[in-house]
Amino acid sequence: MEAVVSDFSPLLFGIQSFILLFGFFLIGFVKGVVFGDPFRTGFIHFVGSFKLYFGLWVPDKNLSLPLRFLQIISGFTWECIQNIIGFWVSIITLIGLDVRSIELVNGIVLIRLSHRFGAFALGRFIIGDNSIEPDPRNLLFQHEYGHVLQSRVSGPLYLFKYGIPSLISAYRNQLLHSSSWVEQDANRRAKNYWDTYVADEVWSYRANPIIDGSRIVNPKWWEFVLFVIVFFGLVSLPVALLYLSIILN
Ligand SMILES: [Zn+2]
Image (cartoon, rainbow, N blue to C red; front, side):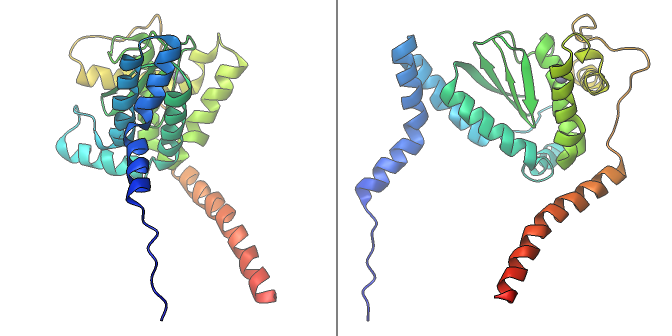
């Protein structure tokens, strides 16, 4: 009989646990040594990493209890594609860029950088520049929340229906970007949300114009059907090829 050899090393386990727990503190600390204030940046990275890990578990307090529960489930299922991408983009951002703060607010994770570039939303992760604040009156934040709401309503379709069209529109024409249908949709959704959950009028029509005649464009039922067909088509093709190669051998 062969003896079962355990290769468990308490020392290695200890080191791995330490790196997992304090790795982001160390990254922040090193960045702080280079750019100034190591303990503060170390602390921001340490706390920030936990907010990233557990952000999807903190729902929007404005929603009713059943809807909060639904939002948590939705984050890990219905909206998982954009949330997985959002999570990893946020992790890479936290490691590589100058992150000023990470906050959990209105059921989202808000990451503020020192750079100037505007903002973008990936599922429930919003990454914004130095001017973004977790305040419905904040011009960037109030608009980006519209993309969060698009994700909520469209789930797996989000990137194809709103995310990529928005990116293309921004790339094509900065000036006309805010009047494109996808940005108008985001503005209208966001304004409805803030009107419902914040008592006074917070929307800035100047910064985030809402054009007469523009409308909310919900995903259509056949777009979900198309998604399922294309998605499972893409998954089943390699599986079928693999299966064929096995039975033919
Ligand atoms: Zn936008």
